[in-house]
Length: 279
Image 1 (cartoon, rainbow, N blue to C red):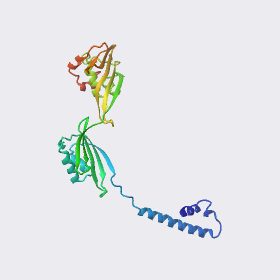
Image 2: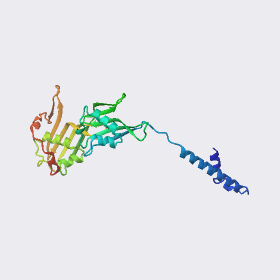
Image 3: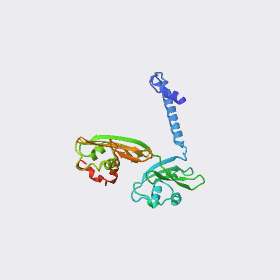
Image 4: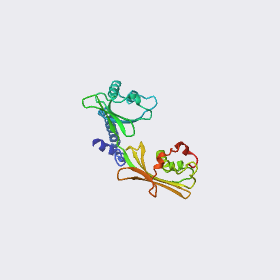
């Protein structure tokens, strides 16, 4: 409060406006006191130490690079070598670290150790085994690490798209947001009746609906199954509907109810050939 009062005297309308002969001396005294207060506050702030925060959790997402080993990854994350070795020893009981592959996803949780703020502890390591499963290593309450396989939480949603073909079916599908897997399913359905290298032309159109499963963060996804697909080629229309019977059998049928089982016997069109031409 004293600092605030003194500071206000140095503002317009304060001491600067006084014309009394003693005003200059008073102003000098006030300036000295303000300087002392400011210096004292700065010294106090400089001497105050922020409390060390122990147990801070740090999460990292890692993609395996060429030449990486699990030991390399843990050491890069700042985990002491002895602890990294202990974690890998526990992991090796159910998983061969040599199976780690380029592009594989890992999640790491690190805890800043209370007794050593500059160090870290490994709290959790999750290795993406495949689309649906992770291998999770976590610190056990009694010490050491527990390892178990967990099923990933997947999100299901329906994707629909349609487009008129300007250049090729492949490019039209890509521009409509349809992935290669979904496009290949459409091609398999109609490959018995359509020569995709010669029958598809500018002005033709397609529609597709399919169910997709994805990780919650959307980083990985895949087509689960097609629900509906259609091709319109120079007035010729082809449609395919997915239907599940009362006994649980699933099949695809055209608009007249005729089964499209024949598409299962057809050799799929090479997807690499779809990137050029009208197919």
